[in-house]
Amino acid sequence: MKDETKQPGLPREPHGVHLDGASRALSMALQKTFEALLQEPVPEKFNELIARIRAEELRKAAESGSEEE
Image 1 (cartoon, rainbow, N blue to C red):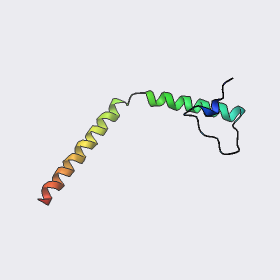
Image 2 (tube, rainbow, N blue to C red):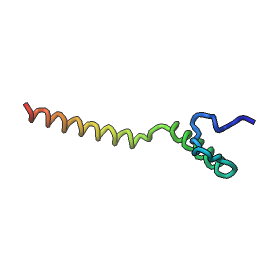
Image 3 (tube, rainbow, N blue to C red):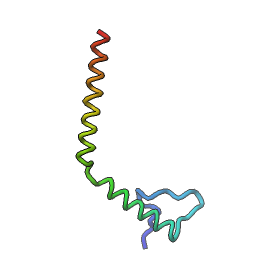
Image 4 (cartoon, helix red, strand yellow):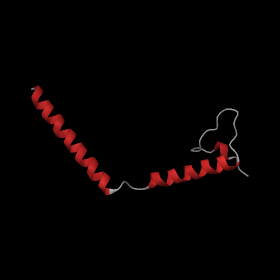
């Protein structure tokens, strides 16, 4: 059986504490869930919202830059 405490990506155990049983299973399940979530693409609605926010920030920056001249 391989030692899972050395695998990258798993939460570190506090010094002197060894995760076992339910806590280890929960930790591993949460890690798998979040890894899968991070692989999902950003929904198009969010991309559109981010684009509008960036455009507004650029517009405001351009306006404040022209006021300083």
